[in-house]
Amino acid sequence: MPELRLLPRSTESHVLASPKTPPDRPPLEKSEGRAATVEEARLRQQAIGYKLRQMFDDVVSEPVPDEFLDILKQADSASRNGR
Amino acid sequence: MVKPHPTDPAVEAAFKADLVKLIPHLRAFARTLCGDAAQADDLAQDAMLKAWDARGSYQMGTNMKAWTFMILRNQFYSEKRRSWRQSQLDQEAAERTLVAIDDPSAPIALDELRLALGDLPDEQREALILVGAGGFAYEEAAEICGCAVGTVKSRVSRARRALHGILDSGGFTRDGKPADQAMRSILADADRMSGAR
Image 1 (cartoon, each protein chain N blue to C red):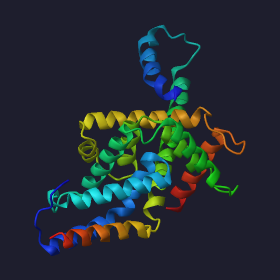
Image 2 (image 1 turned 30 degrees about the vertical axis):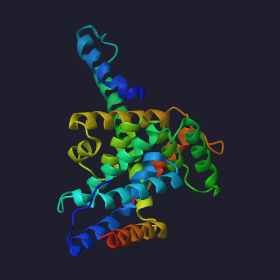
Image 3 (image 1 turned 90 degrees about the horizontal axis):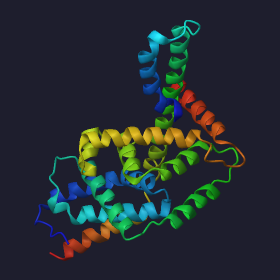
């Protein structure tokens, strides 16, 4: 994501360049823009996280196919008979 | 072959009951790890059987979910090393996933995320799933993956950034819908859910 990758760099360059920043670009406006970008990135990350959990939980709540229990039952009785 | 210890039948029954309870989670981990539902269930079954065979080496009272997840991911990588999952298969699986959903009103966002997840390097995908969906702490995920906690943290953050980038770059389209619409739909869903909760 460009804004995420660029964020630390632009923060740094702002700090380093601040004495030379021309007065026609008020720093307040800049930081407001940055805050909006950060907020948007945060929201998107939240949305991705939510979807990821949903993807996982959807499978967790599916009924377990009988095959699983059959296989385990077979393995269990095989180990009993082996003793 | 792991030789089972001669165990108390009651202990063994308790182990089996706990293992059965973990099956849905093993299936979910396998599905998100390898994408294809049929292959994932094969993987989850193999992991379940391996856990059963290794029950003698499991210490009761320790984190059984983490233990079985470790077995599953090790199985995933050893099968993968035998080129069980090639890029060819990936392609087919991705196409099947897309074709399988023919309800036009179905939300497309999960498909987008599934494909984007498939594009991540394995170790990043695994770390993100464990921490972001499996409910594991970084320390537990590190044990499951056999790496340092800091490594897990950096993999998770790289995975998050990469997903964000993949979903945003318009790499995926479906039914003529561009990815920014998919992202809007993800956001709308998330808004709805956070409002509902």
